[in-house]
Amino acid sequence: MPPESPHPAVERDAPAHASPAPIETPLHALHLRLGARMVPFAGHAMPLHYPAGVLKEHLRAREAAGLFDVSHMGRIVVTAGSGAEAAAALERLIPIDILGLPQGRQRYGFLTDEAGGIRDDLMVARLDDRLILVVNAANKAADLAHLRANLPGGVRAAELPGALLALQGPRAEASLARLAPDVAALRFMEVRETRILGAPATVSRSGYTGEDGFEIALPADEAEPVAEALLADPDVLPVGLGARDSLRLEAGLCLHGADIDRDTDPVEAGLAFAIPPARRRGGVREGGFPGAERILGALERGPERRRVGLLPQGRAPVRAGAPLYAAEAGGEPVGHVTSGGFGPSLGAPVAMGYLPASLAEPGRTVFAELRGQRLALAVARLPFVPARFKRG
Amino acid sequence: MLRFTEDHEWLKREGDVATVGITAHAAEQLGDLVFIELPKIGARLKKGDAAAVVESVKAASDVYAPVSGEVTEINPAAVDDPGSVAADPQGAGWLYRIRLDDPAALDGLMDEAAYAAMPK
Image (cartoon, rainbow over all chains, first blue to last red; front, top):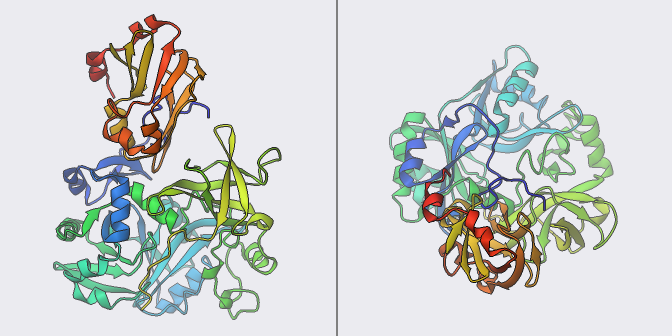
């Protein structure tokens, strides 16, 4: 492997580009008090891990509960003369069912581009006549500009300020319900407004770990007492971005900018589940979103390549960017790894990547090139760790 | 004689053989280690060659040969339990031993005080 870092024994993936001072989240002072190792991420100063370390943080979120600061993510509210008007307008940009989204529910979706690529993936929640999007930190400025440029007159998009926490794990419900008993009634992908320690909070039963849990939006100046009250529960450990990534990878969830981007379409990415019959060929609201031709065509024909889980057969993690080959020697690359690392709950390396549809069958062996050698990987079903959502 | 490199490795020379590992600072920066690959015994390393790989949950880092020579021994405990390197990087968590082509090559490296004073 060619040298890439002048300080090879120090983590190589820390962004080195010059950039303006990172934005501090409303929990910045708390992170410092907790002893977090802070890193710049998508323009924000974020905790990579706390003193417990990535492994313990990851395992705590699977076994009890982990508290994440995800305030770097964007929350965008879309409003119009009516909820239906706002929903119809968003459906011109997102190929999911938003008109049929009931009050107090949220859905997964994505903003597509004219070539059928994925501009960003997101959650859309309906609260009364408001539609609230949660988008990736790195894309939020571009998403907001895209919405404002493409939503019709009379439909407004505005960024919501404040903090966003995630509480994830099998003890999340018990822990949060001590502060807000009504959250226990939520089922997976339901959302409601409530109060936590007197603060107005928007709570959804969702997350990015494959575990049951909640995402909690709070006013910036009322977030820290809520975070501290949750951390006072001995079940709850603060969890940084390091374990957030290993948890979502084990859960088979996509990271935009790695597993999905404008060069991938939702069908090959395995995200077609989000596109309901109403938006497909022959549906009552067929197409009508950017890239509909390519995406609906891929749905009918089947994709040429597919995102798959990959289990390296040795102990060496295979990282993003590694080329994939059909054979142990020779040949041209047939795909590449888009996310890869160590899965603490599996105690083994895990990865995701794209393969031609003919090779994308669980149980097949493919090979990744790593440090000049070809290592065997088994194509595996996703997720690696079963989801434990409270579907109710 | 204990010496340090700007790449956060330490070397301890006994005769014409040096033991090599990563510093406590490097271990702290890397966090939990989950995979370590060491050179083969008998391998010839030139200064600057990628000699070993240490990986945390998130990232892989090369450890470069700080001097030229031949690998005489590796630490099997580091491979079996990467966590042992994170726990005691400058002791039980050593990585490999190398017979120095030029025992004087260590003279140009930093001593402990100079490494401690180096901006990191």
